[in-house]
Length: 547
Image (cartoon, rainbow, N blue to C red):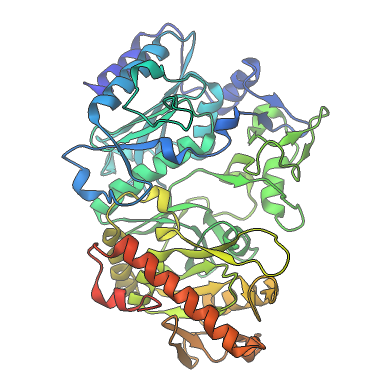
């Protein structure tokens, strides 16, 4: 099947093609077609079906072809294969549906602020709002796009958010649901044919994360490390990266007045330095507090003419007067907003910068046993990069609630398709090449686990982050935490020295040791399961707690 030829034929032959409308024209089309409502402040509000209020990981598939399958870790639970024949059927069916639409929308954008590896992405969809999402999230095509390594290797993205798959054709080919029926939704990536399909998912994140995953496959093969992180730099052009799962404080700690933001989610580290993939942000809105997150709140809810605004609010509770209740999660706890980076006040317009001076791994350890700050050598950094650890709370039973350990490789497991050593080896190599220092910051509990201890005060966490970024931890003394194989400073400016060693903050020292050993064994068990048969360097293996 000639995927790209048939895709292009629709654009050339369809009777009503809205080809690269301006942003204001796209906004007007979305409103006129009743795909979104204009709110009190001028942003757009939309609501999706229940199955489209978040990602669909069990329906997110990678086409398994001989040309690409050896690069992919098929043992990872998020790398779900689909055979080429099934994808060709889905692509043909989607094209047939698209041909029958009254109107189709096309956008030509790129992913990647560094034009030397910007990936051209052409979207074909029947929804103006999906087109607007790509205008918010993907970047304009640069004048020098011909210099990109992907200039002649563009990616085609076909999106039918509200149409459902004819499941009678796909029994035994797509996922079987608990009720015995076949899933009518598919998000599929074909790395070899350079084609992607979103069929039946109206969640904006399906488009964003599909392209993120595509970049995370292509870039390592070009010696570029893709990183799920935020990035900022100071007035000396010293750049820092922040990696962390939800709830660890990544957004809060990276959005600060004295450092310009390159981007908040997806970056590449090439021989040129760091570059943001995106043109915008896709922020969670639930419980958004304008005092704690003023930048995000202002970006989404500033007042403007709707034709200029164009922030898209998904699945938030809205009153009839067009105002929102962001603390009401009855529709979903995953309400979101898409908006351009230019809506933020302190950004670096180019979204590119130098090689990082400092990288911060963020974890929120609800066990209360990890040090609040540690310095990682390359082998340690590669290990913690592989593990992507944080912990979540199991519930609110009476008494102490046992935290649930969460491991997400490279702090973004669902979007990292390649074999794990490809990413971790590249991180270690680049750290050494550019003298990059990595710190692990625990924004979680101190003095005991959740229910006994307390969450680390944000002012202390900020002081530790500032000390790390400002180089104030480079020449202090360190001691080894032998349970977790971490180098812990004995002094940090502005921080009481006793809290730097977790055991000091626990009244019951035996309870601390038991809890720490329990967590270390969870690390070891997970490592063996995820990486026991993978090509991980022995020195990195030895850094794993419990080993």
